[in-house]
Image (cartoon, rainbow, N blue to C red; front, side):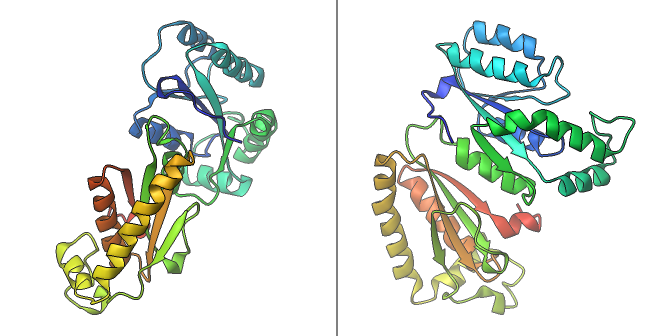
Length: 294
């Protein structure tokens, strides 16, 4: 369940969840979105923040078991205090993760669990899960990060919260490979595999759809111009309708075989065209992220 956001300057997201579930990544994502972010501020100090002047922009506050004076009841009290204030509209975001994945992450980083410094990470994970269970049950928004990469989590944060300070619809344009499946949460998918494939040109194989000569190659396909015109016309028809219906975010997925050439080129062109028409647009190239090209 997502709570309606009253105004950009009143949005407060309380970010919590088990250690290792991705809270730091989430806080960084909020900061990139223009939120005022504070991580692990003592709960007692938040009362001063509530009673003081507004910071003038949305906030994301990271809270976990390492927070001084942390308690589940204390988090609920802070949430209620924000809600009772005439300046803020709070939401509780809970980042969850399966035990085996948390164990693997602790094994990779070799860090001690904050709730079991002298015991195994598994014991700490179990204790923390039991402690945080009430917060999980009453969270306004829950994201399971078990199968998410940092890029995936940032994209989810952007989709849920990126447009809350916007006066219109936020549009996300993503390229992907069908080999890895369609990304979660896509509203509209277009298959670009019918276009001429630059992969079969040895001079273009190691390049991407962000390169001008790759786009030029794809544009030579006699079907490309009409396809892109119709795609742009379709989005021009749909986006205002979704905005009028109150939708805050709309995502468009462009897929091809490898997610490196055709889908990337079309995504770049569509995002640029939508931005030129005044839409708030973000771009994401999933397969290029995975290989570290973006």
